[in-house]
Length: 127
Length: 137
Image (cartoon, rainbow over all chains, first blue to last red; front, side, top):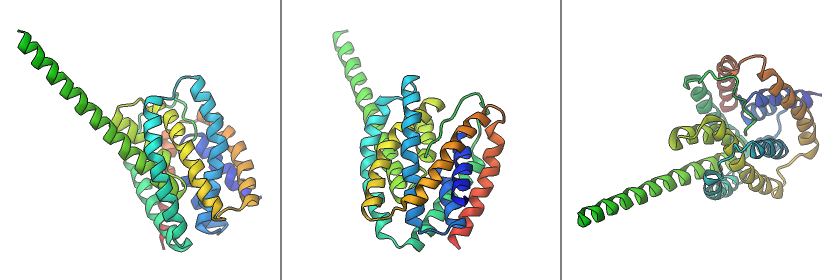
């Protein structure tokens, strides 16, 4: 039930386009205490089906700029390979602390960033 | 006249190739940073890629959002593969969270039409910082 609730709340927040993994991962770690790697893998797996659905809608509405996404994704795959390898090689406790630092930076960025006050533009969940 | 025209074209070519190089440098940086965050932290790809595309590539916000999902999806598949193949996976936990998340995602999209997200964003930032501090110490 707790897991369902955490999913529900993270889902609401990511459906509003505010967060995604940045809600789900800390919520899991703080309330359920899994290994940091497991919390991160939950978020990765969670993203795949939701992203596929969102992407179908976006491609239909011609919102995806493939001229950008293809080259960026190719270089991104290199980053993802090294990022995952590093994560796997780290002990859970260290990874949790690094994640905390990353979250702190993103949190401060959210605080200072200017909002365009454009609520009619729908934002679909992103990782 | 002909010479001038030639010089002009040469200059144009230079500007064009320089622009292309700059563009690809940005693609490489955005790709590597987004991919690294996605693999290392299992999240945060969108939080990086969306503002990066808006600020560095002058992309419109809603296009950047949709494009970010198309970039992060393949990265996530690769990252998830490495996590799973190293048995960092708990299927029963994942399934329960996904069930809640699907319902939540639907409700969130509905709620977005009722209450604006810019105030919630700031409240959420406070929670992020609090959670971050808790995770570091």
